[in-house]
Length: 96
Image (cartoon, rainbow, N blue to C red; front, side, top):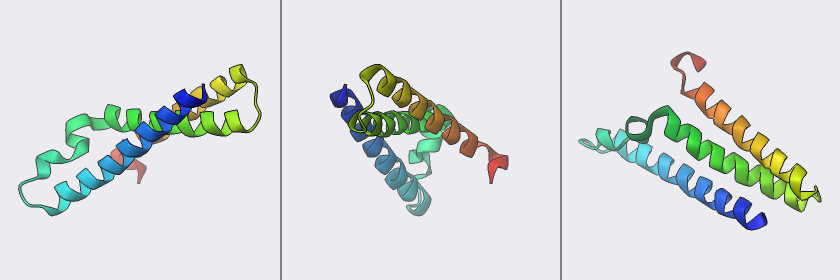
């Protein structure tokens, strides 16, 4: 399962980095506003990237923390769900 957690962590990290770079490009380069990831993927895309990152981080932490495999999976799922919910909450306009 560590490989699954690691792949999820790498994909989530790459997705987050790509999201930040694309948002920066869309905000600073004239004519590239359509490249903003919030326009392309919306709230669901943000939650997916956050969920992958949370699942990978929580799974790796639980796995290397000595948790039994079933409990580590539950922890990984909880971590992914928690980070996805936070991403959805932050996407609301009144959250700031």
